[in-house]
Length: 166
Image (cartoon, rainbow, N blue to C red; front, side, top):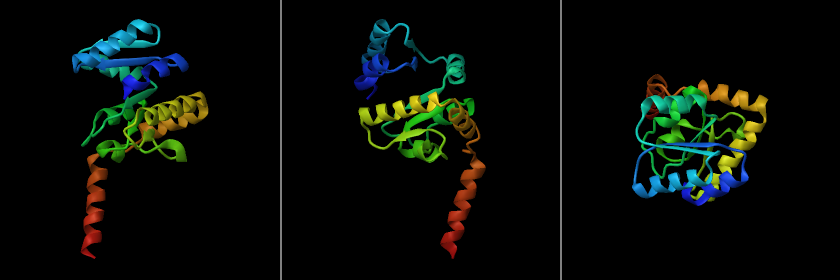
């Protein structure tokens, strides 16, 4: 999906994008090629570098995780702790941990379908939200205060269990 929208995003929006990771060489080459086209807007590091990942979380305003499927997902929860607002596709653990801030109560930005332009629309909503500095501060605080602990999950499980006994 990112291949389909990255050029448009970098060309039309006032953003900087950082990519860290490794994977299929086709995707690594794509990101490296795009870095060559947009050296001031796109940073790419190929590899698994945990200390760098923490610095990226800490220094970023938003975190994109457009998974096709995601049983749990830890990266979005790590992003929350660092105050990097997640943009995720509503699937599995991403849907469980990130709620859309469009209602003024969520902790990130979401999109439902596995579609590049739906993802781009959510990214643009995030960029627009970032421009409202007061509103953005509230959203970051809400993100950092998100409770994705085992205590919360266990409490919900117990509540569901008790409701079934009635």
